[in-house]
Structures are given as structure tokens and as C-alpha cells.
Image 1 (cartoon, helix red, strand yellow):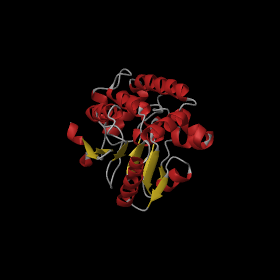
Image 2 (image 1 turned 120 degrees about the horizontal axis):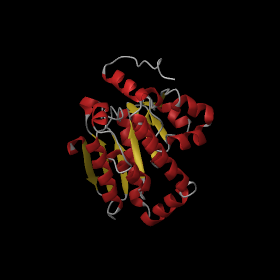
Image 3 (image 1 turned 60 degrees about the vertical axis):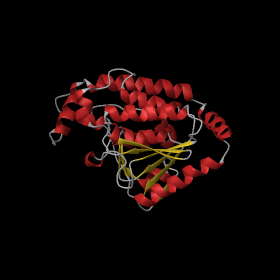
Image 4 (image 1 turned 90 degrees about the vertical axis):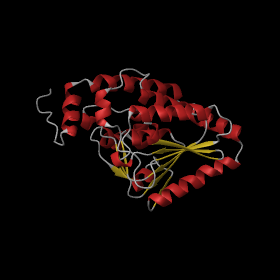
Amino acid sequence: MSEHILVERDGGLLTLRLNRPDKMNALTRDMYNRMGDALDAADGDSSVRVVLITGGAECFTSGNDVADFLQAPPTSLDSPVFHFMRALFEFSKPVVAAVAGPAVGIGTTLLLHCDLVYVARDTKLKMPFVNLGLCPEFGSSLILPRLLGQARAAELLLLGESFNGQQAADWGIASGVLEDGPSTLAKAREMARRFLELAPSAIADSKRLMRTPGREELRKVIEEEGALFGQRLKSPEALEALSAFMQRRKPDFSRFA
């Protein structure tokens, strides 16, 4: 439902707030569509200068809502999740993220496409794609090895190991680390509002120049990941892992070659 994504305006600052605290802001198809539509509209609205994405001071997002995902898995690049990915990837204005609490799956990979990211020190980031019988998404299989090196990226993507806010800042995934959720949100708002005082076309041109090298390669990787992700959702490994998740048990991959 649209009430799970709050769209708030404060002058030229547009805030997208994940608002499903009872489910740790787990993302549904409706939420992806709402965010994608809001980003598309903001990109074409000259009065919007900057976008802030947050889940509030307690939780960013626990990732996909597994039950919703299993009910209607993404079957094409026109699916809601890819609508959101495309809107964020193409967004021409600054995007700032404020991250506190869990940031799982796409809750971590979407940060790779934001311009400024502020995290709470105790934020727990994780990309457990392989753990669920799936594969990396949103360009993470390209971006992370280049940013972190193959060895560290393998720990995060192949083993699904978690890392905290301080590590995210040390590794260049985050712009800065704050002591807690409220201070993280305050810092992100402060930095987002700085864009309101700057020349908007100069910012847009500069962002485009910064992101042009390798952009088409990244676009192709995102599409390849998305197609493979959809295939893997139907795989026996993924069905076992997702069923185990729903049943609160450990998956058994011993019978898979």
C-alpha cells in the first residue's frame, strides 16, 4: 500500500520514507512502484532539487518481503523492483540516504547508486543473495569488486557476510558514520539541504560526468543480474532457501550438485 512509502516535501527537498515498521520496512511490489513513480516524477519536476531516502531512525529495510516476492516474483525487467532500480539509476539529481538499523539485500545495494550515504555506527548491512539461492543484483557484482577488491567483495557477496556502519564508511560505501539513528537522519537532512543552495544545472552536469564512465557497462550488468535473478528464483536451491526462511529453519543444500 502507498502508506508504506511516505513522500514528504520541504521546499526543494523530497523525502521518501519507508514506513512499514511492523515488518522492518520489508519491501513489497507496491512499495517499489511507489518509490519508482516518485523518483520519475521528481526527476521531471524542476522544483525538486534533491531526494532523501530513509527508513527513519530505527530501521532502513530488511529487504524484500519474502511472502510478497514468492507470490509474484519478478519475471521481467518491467517488474516493480526493476522499475525502482531503473528510476534510481537514471535519476539526474542528488540522492542522499540516511541508514540506521538493518539494511539487507537491496537495502544495501541501492546505496551504491546514491550520491551521499550516511549510516549509524551500529547499522548492520548484508547482501545474503547466495544464502537464499539467488545472485547479486543492482550492479553489485560489478561495483563491489571494483570498490573493495575481489577478496572482500567475495566475503560480502559469496558468503553473505554482514558489516557495520563504520566498515561501510571505511570502505567507501558510506560518506560518513554517525553515533545513532537520529543523528544520522539529522546529518543526512543537513547535507541534502546544502544542495538547495547550489546551482542545480551545475550539479546535474557534474553528476552526469562523474557517472558516465562505465555507465553502459553497469547498465548491462544490472540487466544481466536481473534476468539471472529471475531465473534463480525458480531454481530448486532458491525454493528450498526461501521455504526454509518462511519456516524459520536452516536450508538444506546437501542434495544439490
